[in-house]
Length: 201
Image 1 (tube, rainbow, N blue to C red):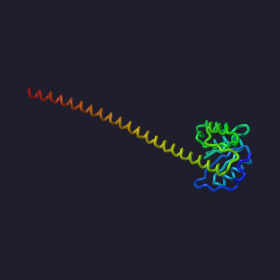
Image 2: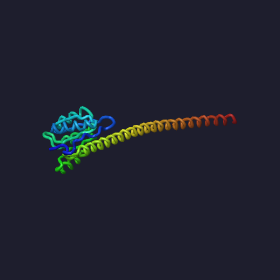
Image 3: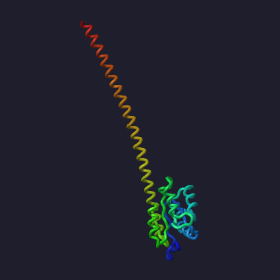
Image 4: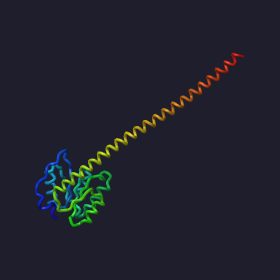
């Protein structure tokens, strides 16, 4: 199957900012080479894999900003790979765009149901793919930033809770000391009154 539409031959503009790393997974080496070359022109660092098992090993060994995953592959399908990605705590949030056949709408639905962040039908316009890659990576970055902010906030709340707990303990100890002091003063006052009464007698 063709990867790109025939009128899609012009390289896109390089992306600005830090280079993002993409893992492209497709059993067709021709498709992989095209993807690698075109995405490289946009400034992405692209790692290529022609089977699902190797792709999972690569994902486990290093971090990627996004995975482009072909749906139909021998031995291990794209859905199987996606299920493994989503089933691992370390990679559950890894952005994945599934590449599907244009006539197979049900496969696209299955891909999204399995947890794909987006899908693109083959053959596709490269500019469309590039725009979707940008959108998915940007959304993942914003979600990661939000999670970091939440984690920082949670840590601050936990620290405040500990400080509050310590302050309550100190307050309880102060109240206990106050009660002991009052009791001691009362004892001294009673003794003084007894001594004063004896003197008057």
